[in-house]
Image (cartoon, rainbow, N blue to C red; front, top):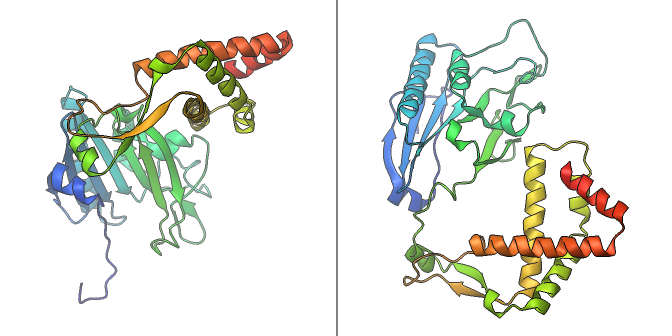
Length: 321
């Protein structure tokens, strides 16, 4: 606690206790405006840079920009593609005056570090997920701007799932809104040991495909057909255009339908992961993929059999959108 009453900046990185005890390899705090945390896993490392760009201190802005540039260069010089970089914070600047500012004025703050990030194909998470949306992270009462960012290195491209801006008044009582993003790390972090899962009482669902016969597969196909009569899916497919989030939502509905039908028609049981298991069982493996392909073909044959040619064409048109 400080004894003076001066307004202070602050930032931090919050993590699960297990993450800190096991995976944090390095923590750096080179200046009051920079925090660096490196997480080291068996297959990869993830470096997180949290920054604050002071609006009126040119020297400190140079220091922050130099640190970011150094981290970008380190990332570029490592060619194994197993090092991931996240750069986040309050940059007190905007990328695009037309998209990131409520009222466009002649004077606007652009930060050269943005050019460096974009030139090196770093991902502005909010703009990637919301190409045409205008939301802001800070307001002075007369104008609003998006000055808080989360940037990802290019090898996160296929892992970014979602990014949004949330009102922070009820959470932190800050004059800045919260920028958030969700990334899928299941394909890049694979050292979640079976013994750890067992200690956490994790359960896995496994399906008994060996007990399936033609009648049971037919029952599964019929159940899948019934489940595909889904108003949410139809609404998504009938949109005039689809962005990345829409496509993710469509596939999520597909996944939920197939899993619901499988739970209903394919014998299954839950098991606890134990130390004697070389591989954590999962339904999302090659066997399951072949099963989905077979079930899908059977389902489509049923649909084509009982629907008119015009109805089948309408379905194909929806899928091809």
